[in-house]
Amino acid sequence: MINILKSLVAGLVASLSFEPIAIWPFAIISLGLWYQMISKQHLKQRLQTSYFFGLGVLLPTQMWTGIYVGNLPWLILCIAQACFFMIPAFFVGKAKKFNRIAFICSYAIVELTLRTLPFTGFGWSRLAFSQVDSPLSSIYPLLGVAAVALFVAWFATVRNLKAFLYPALIILCASFIPNPVIFDGSIRIALVQGGVVNLGLDFNDKPKEVFLRHLNQTQNSILPNQVDLIVWPENAVDVDILRNNDVMQSVTDLSLELKTPILIGGVTNSPNPRNQSMLFDPNLKQVYTKRYLTPFGEYLPLRTLAEKLSPYAKQINDFDAGSNPVVFRIDNNDFRTLICYELLDDRFSVENNMDFLLIQTNNATFGDTAQLDQQLNIGKIRAAESSRHIGYVSTTGTTSFIKPNGKIENQLKKFTPGTLVSKIDVSSGSTYAQRYGWLVEPLAIMALLVLLMVRRWGRQ
Image 1 (tube, rainbow, N blue to C red):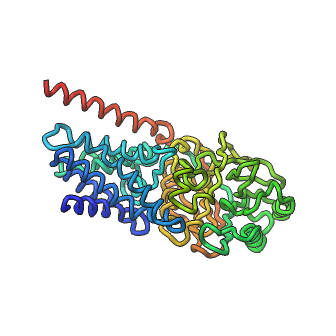
Image 2: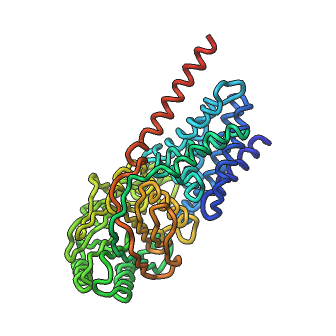
Image 3: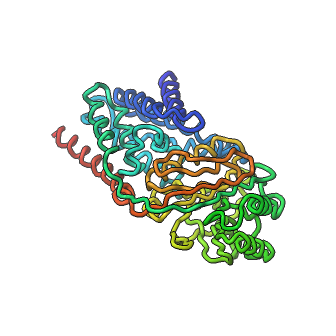
């Protein structure tokens, strides 16, 4: 029982590195406690320690997932994902050689499984997402999120000054490596946070209410030719715009009146729901369909079982996923957008190499929870990773402009309708992370395999 409590407490320390507490050293401290415990234990104890450490990380960090659908789905998600934290227990242990290397590489595999398994994964609680304000932030544009996981684990295994100097020197050198991304010119963008009437699953309970809030907010706050692009968040149009000609015409008229392209977020049905971003200039010009769908939110794996566990499961209609990336174009600028959950998918990072990047999200379904700040934090990391200015727009908050270094430039208050206008840099080129970051996890797996062979040869 004492071992279980120590493991849970160590995991709880890690959870404090995420928003809303966001004390980044706690991620390293907690991994250090975990490593110290399992490096002195036998397999059964290591598995127990690692599992309850995972629970300690996940339960508080992902508590918001059950805010409107009950505690059972939240508990099932965390109980299942905690199994992934048991991976280092098979490579690190009492009297084993090269424990430090084994822990560093195996923890990278923990984060790989979190973001990929099961179904499409749920990598929300990767500790590599907690370091954007730490010295490790220089690694994001250099080798990406997966490499940050390696460095967090590396520092966690440090036990003396000499061992500390190696990763510290790499971090220091990384900050001086020239960034291949070039900034040339600027563009003026308006982000519209129209708000909703009700927080929760019924945020769009009144048809056209959310749409009208964004329409009115735009009309009352933006002048003709004031900006180069207006952006509405995900689900800002709360009816099918393809089946409501009056809504379609209103957006077209607004774009024409303001002499400005408008990117909106909405759900269409053709015949199944699709979560889409649509560019009006002034007529409907381009459409992007969300590709990385949210399991248990936009589609329901194991539907029969889920409907038995939660009465809310029947309210979920399976969405159709998009299959193609779309590059939006306005005047002489190209940009991409990520829709909400797509922030979590490292595979999209290589695509974020246009002039600038937008993130459209709808946080109304999660009320006033840590989800809002945690997702914004991931947006900051994607900005640093791609060295791109990001316009992050939400229905309820926190709508922000994020600098290419991952710092917040300016933002609106949560749950308060408003318009955020800013001039952002136009970028060109790809970071080293976008070019080579995909190699980190395969190399970690290869290193573990080599380690196993070396250990086997050493016993012969």
